[in-house]
Length: 204
Image (tube, rainbow, N blue to C red; front, side):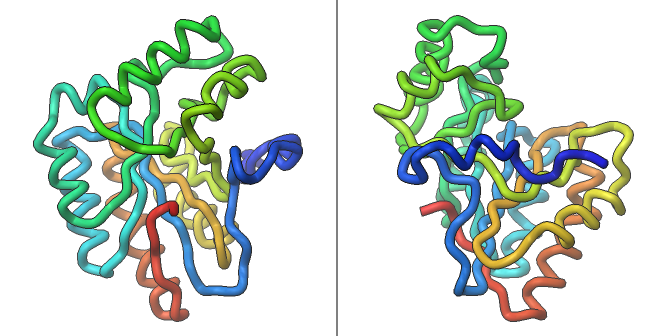
């Protein structure tokens, strides 16, 4: 069984600086998309979201924004939030703290946000203490595994449906390798929870 939920020790962090989900009580789900923007995947995801009047948060890789600045504008114009996902999609476990922060701030030069998600969910305590001065870490409560070659589109949908509830932060990805799975899972996910009276908001 894959670890769809985040590691338990994330709960030890201050929720003002690191969030995995939001308090329940209202029928709101927080959809997020990592790794874009790319022309092969981002416009289609935006179209699907628009059909359900859903708003999401896109954690963007700076180098992809550099290559596709028009997609950044489109995401923002459609009412979605933006998050920082480093410039080079760095693995924090393999990057010194200073170099990691420099890469994060290079990404930040393309847009303004207070939201940050570390690629792969991997970061060190030193990186956390450096970056929390500038950003709020956003992790997840439900990971769809759309990036995993051994996980089918049907299984991605199953993970998303089974582990989502009021206040959940759900992760999809927004690149060429995941477009077929997102094309299958996202509209079915949105339809299921819309029929239950849920709405879909950006990360505040």
